[in-house]
Image (cartoon, rainbow over all chains, first blue to last red; front, side, top):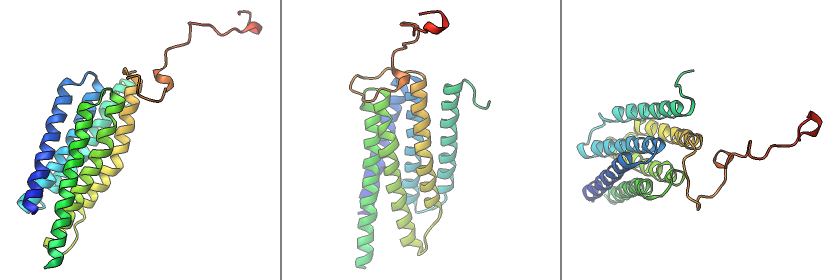
Length: 89
Length: 130
């Protein structure tokens, strides 16, 4: 049962990543692309967690934490750049 | 034995629910029509989805190892704190750039109204003009 649930969840997350790539390429404005990247890093964290469940190891959770931190900081940096024209004033 | 079957069912349900919520959030982001609508999907549904998946992972390793792990809880906490902040900054950016919006999008913030300054000057008789 766990195998079927794991594969279903992986397929759904990969489909979500493909939809994010669609919005990243088509997205008419800059904030759409930032939003697509923001969602992409959350979905990639989900994929890493699922891979950790599949391989039965906890090694990759540190990389998930790193991706969470760097993704949030990069989102804030690009938003600040678009808002103020500068990142650190 | 029965407890393990029950826990496996809970973990499988949480995994499928998390995948479904992540997919629904991304589908909303790809499908909705303007930026202010698109902001809804990833900020709520995707955050709930990854929360479900991390709780499932935490339960699984708790059952396997016999002791709870703090790392998944840290990732969950961090994501639940940072998601509203980045959503707020994205909304501010969209308002600042004055992205076009559908007529059905409710709310009329001052950043999106037409500029009224200069079209009809405010009279000031005591200052000599008006």
